[in-house]
Length: 147
Image 1 (cartoon, rainbow, N blue to C red):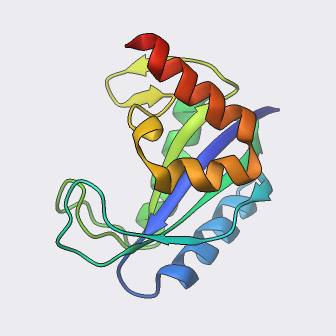
Image 2 (cartoon, one colour):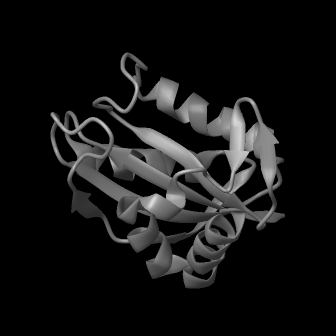
């Protein structure tokens, strides 16, 4: 089993309930087990700022899926919950991002790990530091070393 860290966010509908549902759906997957969950924090939107505040959290999961399979599972949970991708950085019912996977580096067109913006986003780093401070520090140090 590999360990991965996910960031979840929502800002339309009932964000807290949607985060809880996403956690339950992820944990119900045969190849994923949620091992740690941060508290939910409320933050201002990032990127596109004329929208509702976001509810954000981080998860640590154990998985026997490789990074690409885990991404497909996360996108499947989003789709099952009704996520529609209408606007880049726009409002969302649920968003699930892979922030880190076993401290591996993945650079594919559809998947970048660690998440390329994680080091710039307190709404990712604050919950991640709560459950995996060493991983958050690794992401920040790696981004500074990359330049």
